[in-house]
Amino acid sequence: MCEVNWTAVSSLATLAAVLVALWPNFRDWLQRKRQARNLRSRLLTQFVRLRPTIARRFINTPIGQRTDEALSILESEPIRAIEAMMPQAVILSAREHDNVLVAYINLMALVSLPRIEEQNAKDVLDVVDQAIAELQKGKWLQGKMPKAPWSNQKEKGYV
Image (tube, rainbow, N blue to C red; front, side):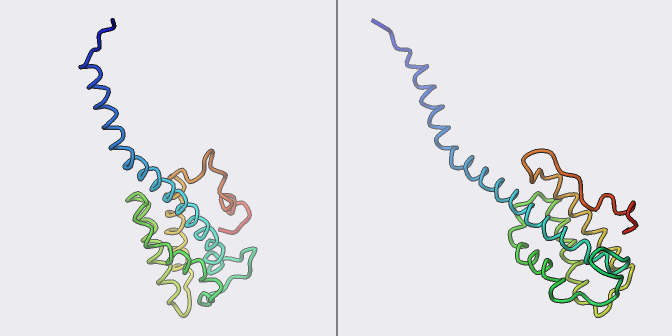
């Protein structure tokens, strides 16, 4: 007859019970990670959409001539989209959250201005670029990050 080592059996049973107990926590962690990746990509989309609109306040861009006019309703649409995503920003890392929050606050201030000064637009664009850079560190894509489309703007004379 085969002798059963009850100590080993009880150890395996304990390990199985611990794994079963921890599974919901692991599943929740995976879900939060997926939600954060999704939020990063949605925020990045809106911030990238805003770049030429803000840059247009101090230089000529492919979307139009330089202007100091306030943002139109259509131009401020990405800001409203970011505003709608702000309650979900708590799932981001602390650094990402802080950068997104600072960018959001500056964008909301920019929307309220009746006329946008060149320096204001440059400062807000810098803050938006910081938020973009931080969000890109969050591995929002499964693989290598593509080159930023605005990285060669100096060569083209846009910045």
